[in-house]
Amino acid sequence: MSFLHDRNAKRYCYFLFCIIFACFLLGTGIVMLQGKALQKIMLSHDNAIVTSLIDQGISKDVIAAAIANTDGSETGESFLASVGRTEQTMPGLIPLISQFQHNLAHDMLAMGIFLGILLLTGAFFFLWERERLYQQAADVISGFVEGDYSKHLPQSNEGTIYQLFAFIDRLATMLQAENEAERKRKEFFKETISDISHQLKTPLAALAMYQEIVEDEPDNAHAVKEFSAKMRVSLNRMEQLISSMLKITRLDAGNIVFEKRAYQISELVLHAVSELTTRAVSEKKEILMDGPMEDIVICDMEWTSEAIGNIVKNALDHTGEGGKIKITCDRSLYITRIMITDNGQGISPEDIHHVFKRFYRSRDSLNTQGLGLGLPLAKSIIDGQGGTIAVQSSPDTGTTFTISFLTKL
Image (tube, rainbow, N blue to C red; front, side):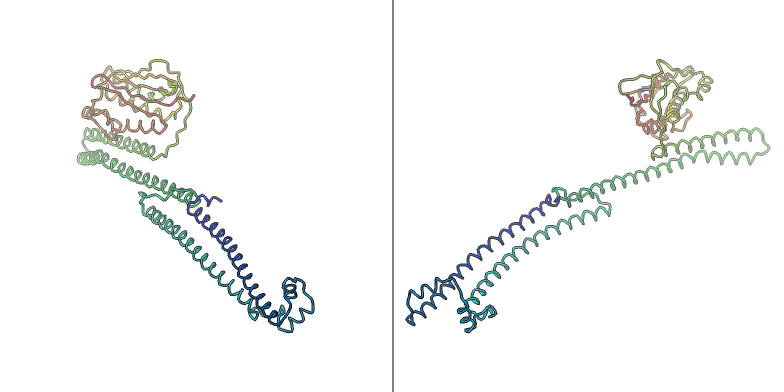
């Protein structure tokens, strides 16, 4: 009976109930009126019989007894049959019955016409209102098909039809979100392809130039060796660029499934910097772990190690000889933090809000190595695992990157 929650359906049911009640009242009224009419006809008939009998000199006592008599006999039945009054006689041939039938038919016809007009009027308004609602819904759904989600289906009332509208509206919201996500994915891949194309132009142009020089001087061993080394550097740069961009693209597209487990922070950090210690020693820099590192963090070992490694690489790039990169951690009731601090040149205020943008290089970084992808990749890795990464820095005082993960209690 959920359709009764629909306001229009409820009104129509009330209307039908009123029609039924009106039929009952009119039927009762017609029965009473026809009873009165039948009484009048019977009195008129009795008057005619009494008048005829009195005119013939019949005693009034006999006439009164005859009128009050309710018992019939075969003699009376035979007499009536002789004058053509039997059960087989057509009612229309009996004036009194014919008159009663005529009056009854007239009243019933009038009642039927009145109730019919009332019922048709109510049904028309109900169907008109329903058609208007359907047309409104059709216009909105047509807009959904064409990509216009600015309008919504009516949901101001209860009932099955409005529940259906609510489900369609939810479906439209999901489609809108999916379309928006698809649009953003297309824009993202378009920007990614554009970035890769732009960044590959320089090493490709360099490779072409180096290759021409080598071809022009095949007998110059020094030139061949020098420019072959430069070609190797350009190829390594292209390999790093393509590898980093593919990782960022996969992370941003949600195609990476992180295998999270519990690891000690010391284990995670050692795995992250294992390949950077040699570089640090050769550049006369130090990578230090300070404080208790036995705390547990829930993460993907390989990906999180790469994120930490990228931050440490960035610190090495921007720290001079004798510099120190210190890795510490702390734990609160809900958050575990890993801090990577260097005492390098720091980041200027106008650059600090751009450090996680792909290919961004500040004016102070133009002479340092790097592609401008290490920090964006680190952010994508940490964000993809539900963590956060933040940076604090000021010129000539060093930089601190803070990686935070929720603590599982």
